[in-house]
Image 1 (cartoon, rainbow, N blue to C red):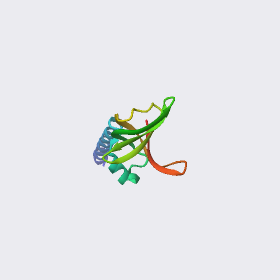
Image 2 (cartoon, rainbow, N blue to C red; image 1 turned 30 degrees about the horizontal axis):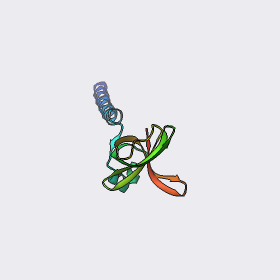
Image 3 (cartoon, rainbow, N blue to C red; image 1 turned 90 degrees about the vertical axis):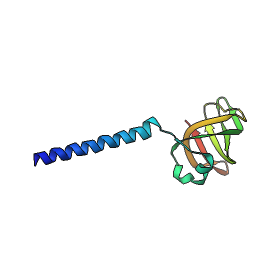
Image 4 (cartoon, one colour; image 1 turned 180 degrees about the vertical axis):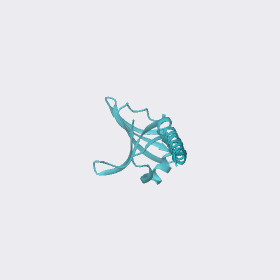
Length: 117
């Protein structure tokens, strides 16, 4: 009986260690999921609250004192990015990491937004 319990315990520990390794690789080594903007907007509910990376051309920007927002365009789709790191220049290709929110209300408009980390 003790031998069976020891084998079970070793097997359980192995599963836990393997599971922890998989979790660490997916969440610590690559915490941002790279998504293209059209897919993000098409499947916005799947990405709500997730940390993602997007890349595109800065189409419009507005900023003051290191804070602001800019519109990132990729394959005909647009995503607004809120930042406190300063805004990139119009026409610049930007890669942005942040948390996706599918419905942020700005005045009377509700937009999908990326909150830059």
